[in-house]
Length: 204
Image 1 (cartoon, rainbow, N blue to C red):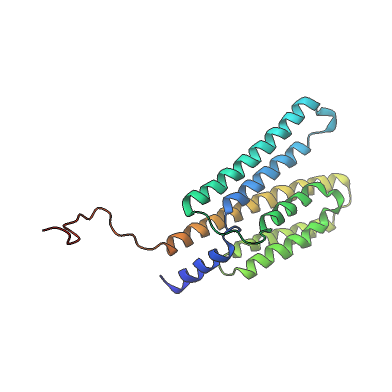
Image 2 (image 1 turned 120 degrees about the horizontal axis):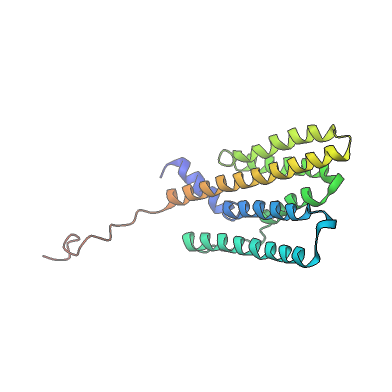
C-alpha cells in the first residue's frame, strides 16, 4: 500500500460517516423535493392530497436514507459509533435554512462558506471538491446583495436552492467515490480460494 493510500485509509477511519456520500446525495434530493412541495401556492393546496404528498415525501426520504445506510453496512460492515456525529445534521440544517428562512436566507451564505471551506481545508487534498460550495456561495452572495425586489429574490432563491442541492449531490457522489477507493486500497489481499489441497501441499 502506498503512502497516499495509507493517508486516505486514515481519513476514512476518521470521517467514515461523513464520507457516506450516497446519504448526502439523498438528503439533497429529499430536501429539493420538499422545497418543490412548499412552492405550491396555498390556494392550490388541497388538504388531503397535499398531506398525502408530504407523508409520501417523508416515507421516501426515510426509506432512501435507510437503504443507503444499509448499503454501507452490508458492503463494509458496522463500525463503532462515535460519541456524537452531527455532520449529517449540519448538512440537513444548512439546506433547510436556505429553504425556510425567506429574506434572512443571506445569513446562510457565510455559514455555507465556512462549513464547506472547513471541510475542504481539513480533509485536503482528498475532499477539495467542497470548494465548489465556497465558489457558488460567493457568486450567489454577490448577486444577493444586488436584489431590490421580491420578484428578483424569488428568482435568486430558486437558483440558490437548485445550485446548493445539486452541489450537495455532486459532493456526495465524490465522497462516495473516495470512500470506495479507500476501501479498495485498505483491503488485504485474499488468498485464491480455488487452490486445492494438493496445490497447498496438503496432498500427494
